[in-house]
Structures are given as structure tokens and as C-alpha cells.
Length: 292
Length: 196
Image (cartoon, rainbow over all chains, first blue to last red; front, side, top):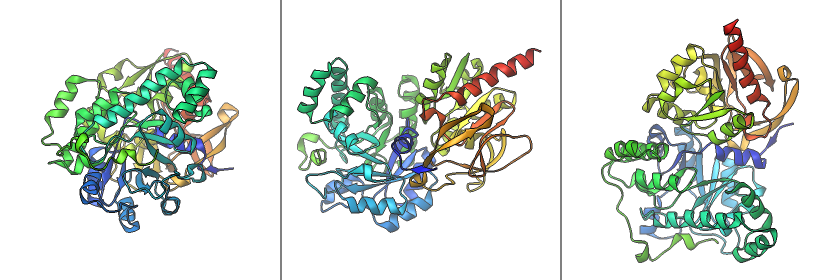
């Protein structure tokens, strides 16, 4: 008897991405560049976060045509984004045969109250989180993979660092809690007790945890790996840089050798100009505040 | 024994944990010079395209191929099996190590929504295990040199050829250590054979 879309099948697939880089692409050509650079998956979307930020308007799921073209262009898995709470977009992507769905704050939220019930899908989901409470709520809803929210489209890694550090710190506190303390902690951060117990036992999230939102250089990628991320999403950082192919390759290499400074010197030597960055303090829209 | 886990990309941690639970030491291999000191190597699941690119980029590919050809015991799961194979039927330009005489079709069951778990009987172990097939390859043909240790849905899912063991499924995602044990025991047996 075959069972599709079980929890281990979904969570296990995310495990296969570990130590890898997942790259945002907006054309089949970019998808091929990403694959040749060594990406473990590509994220199909109409506009990278930096452009969404600049152009404004409602950002939605990518067109079916674009997703199909990208699927046809590469052998690696293809992910696509849906708006927070947009069950219909998610059902469409599942039916289309996308490999992973990102319920993402980078797109304009469709539901200001609820996220998608992700247990109801065979396709696995990744969701963003700024802290342990958000991560635990998303896992409770069925997310098979977590990523930091960071602040997408800024080329500024500070928010991703803040989110990863926050999760790490909260897990360290959790490790020493008694059962009674855990219940109160769960109430404070709005996290289900069962998920928190699992995290306390493992000393980490029960699913793969990637970095995302503001990673623009191989050194940024290495920094996030040093903080304990399992891998890295790069959005605008590649195709908004001066030489995308070189940058893509260098970020892949940076994730592999994040703990080897000599290798990192060689890797960083290859890259020219990264994308222009934004000061997070001056932003009009903070994407990370969408969905909680 | 000292068992290496190829650590360029994929579910490295799960394989290392399985080997350590069986009482052996593991080395995470990102650098070709660590290959020499190993009693055996595991090639994890992950993305075979990515793993190939990185192994070639950082000088692991040729050395690993040569060591396996000279008898180093190796166990590959899923992407690991693709790398060990002779040829990828649906991506004929994809380079492979060519040390396992099988032809494989990558992602042969379809996209992730077609990934599945199933009970799998493994006659050689006289057991049945939970097997996870995640965007798995299918072995489309194999030569007489290849021993079929388990089949699912009419195709070979666990195969062996001398020092090379490979599965299209992921035993490392479960707590069941029997397939890893089979690999480790075959290393000891081959050593005893070599001595005798």
C-alpha cells in the first residue's frame, strides 16, 4: 500500500535540501543558470522581492505558463509562492505538480487572520518565521520546512540574523524548562505545547530551517550557516547583482565551506558587485510583519 | 570502523546518525584528502545535479571514482544511486561515476506530490521495512553483474555489485538501521574475504 503526502514524505523531502541554496528565478533562462551554479531548487515567481518592493501593487502567485516553463527547463525541484492564506492558489500549485509551496509574506496576504491548513495537502509547504512562536504555529498548521522571514528584497541580512538568533535563543531557554514552565511559555509565545515538547527534546526545530530575506553575498550565506541554518534561500541577491552566474556559484560555494575561512577568501574573491542594499530602518513596508 | 558520509549536500546528518547508532565513527567528507582514511563511504540523498557539480568543482569526483573502482565500499541512497549508476536515461548528458551497472530514470515517479512511503520486503534481511521514495529514481535496466536485493512495483530498489550497494529509497529517514547494518557487515565480510 503506497501512501503519498505523509508527514515523513513531506518533511523528508525538505531534509534533502540541506546544505543547499534555493534561488528565486523569474524566467526559464534564470532557472538554468541557477541549476548550473549548483542550486538545489528554484523558486518560480513573476518578480523578485526587490522589484515587488519597488513597484508595489498586489503581488500574487506566478502565472501557470511561467511555472510550467520553469519546470520544463530544469531537473531540480521547483517551488512556487502563494499568498498567505490563499488556499485556492495552493490547490492550483499542488494540482500543477509543483514540488514545494512557499506560503510567503513576500506576496500580498489573502487572509489577514489565518494561514493555510497545510496538513490538508500532499505537496509540502515552507513558511517564514521571526521567532519560535511563529515557527511552532506554522509547524502546527503543517509546514514541513521553516525559513527566517528576514526582510526580503533589501539585500540587508540583519533581519534574517535577528530572526535566527531569536529562534536559537528561545530554543536554548526551552531546553531547561520543566513541563509546567513549558505550558506557560507556550501561552506567552502562542505556541502549541506538543510542538514545543518536541523542540525541547530535539534541541532544534523538528523540520528543516533555512535562512531567507536579505542574503546578498557568499559571506551572508556563510553567516547564516554559522548561526545554524540548514541552508539558504536567495531572492533578489543573485539576479539583482552585477554578475548573476558568478554570484550564484559563489553563494553555493559559501554554503558548502561556511566554516572554512581560507576557502571563503577564495570564494569571495570571485564575486564583483552585490545588489544595492537598503537600510531596514527607512523602509515603508516591512514584509516580515505580514502573517503572524 | 570509520565511515565517511559525502557531505557536499543532502541528508548527511541522518546517515551519520544511523551509522553512529550502530557504534561506528563517521567523517563528513567535503575534502578529497579525507577519502583515503575511510573504511567505507555513504552517498546521501539530495540533488544529484548539485552534488555532481560540487564534487567536480572541488576535486572529489575523479578521486572518488578511482577509489570505488579499486574496491572502496560505498552505499548510495536515491541521488547517491543516480551518481553511482552507468547512465541517466532521461538526462543522458548528466555525468555519473559509472561504477554500478544500472541505467536509471531520475524523478521517475513524478513530482513531489507523487512521492510515497510503502512497506518493502527485503528477502536477504528476512524483514520488511518502511521505505520512503522521495522524487526517487527508477532502475530501468541492470546488467548480470548486479545483484537485486529488493524489488518494489516490479523494479529493483536495492541493488549490489561487489563493493557498491545502492537503494532508490531512504532508510536514513527512519529509525530502522537494518540496511545500514547490511552495508557495514558487507564491509567486514569483504575484509575477511580479502585476508583469507
